[in-house]
Length: 418
Image (cartoon, rainbow, N blue to C red; front, side):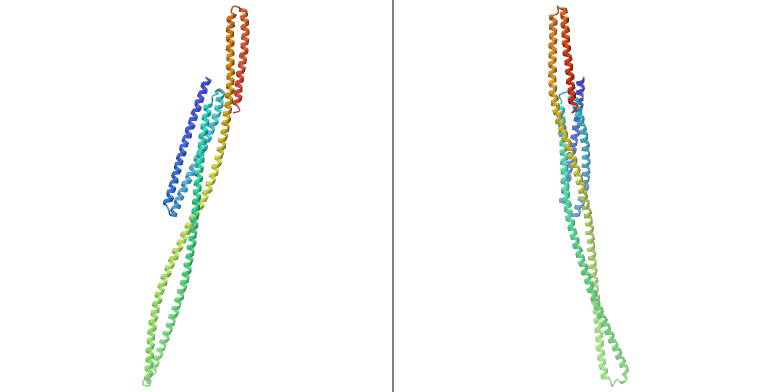
């Protein structure tokens, strides 16, 4: 009955071990699927980088990839948490199996199959740890690629800064040139205005002379005969003055027209310079805005890099702790195997001793039977001999019982420390 119960317990333990194997197989499949997804994302990233040369589009894609990487890191963190829980559960299962193994070793000496299963479980756990190490290596490689990308962004930001500085220098040069040109145009306008004022004064002076001549002609009209020659002279001078006045007026109109044309040209040039200056200012503002965006993205990437480094350090610490746990499990397994071998050898020795005692008891029983046949005709001697034989048999039975108790106590004492 006890052996049947032990068999049932062994079958239950094997069923639990099969369940653990199935769970580990499912986890391995999940890890393989995650690897496939990661490779797919890496391929998509490479394809996007080769097909999108534009910097702004690349930054947008990098932002998307960073968000996806954050999701992947969150998924990896969740998977690692699940794996930690699974490992804790498996550790509890291993401890329970170790206890059950210790209990079964007190009753069933042959536990090699169970130890092999535990070794297989340990190998599966090592494989799972290897997968975790591969995942850690992949995360390191991804961090390196992100660091290289950050370096490229820094170089690009530096180029944009240089371009912005060059644009600012160009805008400053245009501003200085525009101010210088405006000053020159203002000086020319002032000069034209001065010339115009001088011509106006000359015309006024000529008009004053004509008025004076007209008054002289009126005043000397009575002495016209005497002053014919002088009148002709004054008429010649008047005609010359009129021609000079007309010439001055024509020159004035020409200067006014030239001044108006130059003024229009200067105004058009000033408007063009203002538009170009506004365009340059807009370009500088756009470059500054883009620089601020790049700087913000760079700060975000550096923050994510620090967080990823902290996560990797945490994962490395967890992996080191798991390595220590696996090493302790290996040590305990070696101790269990040594104790099992020792128990098997002791059990075999005790079984040999028990078999020898059984043979002796059988020999004694045969001897009793033979002596019963010999002394069948002598009742008194027969009873005495039977009494002696019974005492002898009882003595050997008590010794046999003491030996069995000693063997059982020794087994219990050997199993309890493990």
